[in-house]
Length: 73
Image 1 (tube, rainbow, N blue to C red):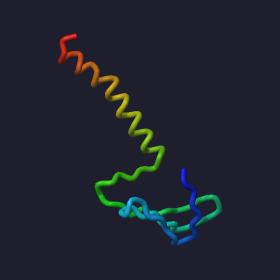
Image 2 (cartoon, one colour; image 1 turned 90 degrees about the vertical axis):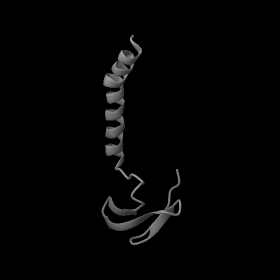
Image 3 (cartoon, rainbow, N blue to C red; image 1 turned 120 degrees about the vertical axis):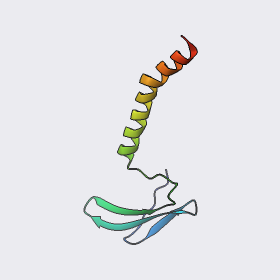
Image 4 (tube, helix red, strand yellow; image 1 turned 60 degrees about the vertical axis):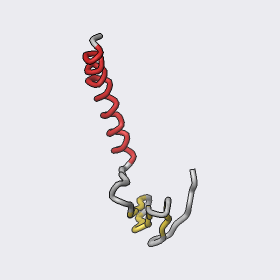
């Protein structure tokens, strides 16, 4: 993991097309702004993990049954 120090209104650039800017700092909270192309999904980690779990559950429950039906097993 790369750890960087930034002050308010300073930014970092990732892969030439994603910019992360520090907008505000209050106590132990930091508000950031992310500028990225529309085709690049940006999620909070807890939301990303929920999406991954839901996708896994969907594959485990219906995906395998549909595949078994297709294969006649």
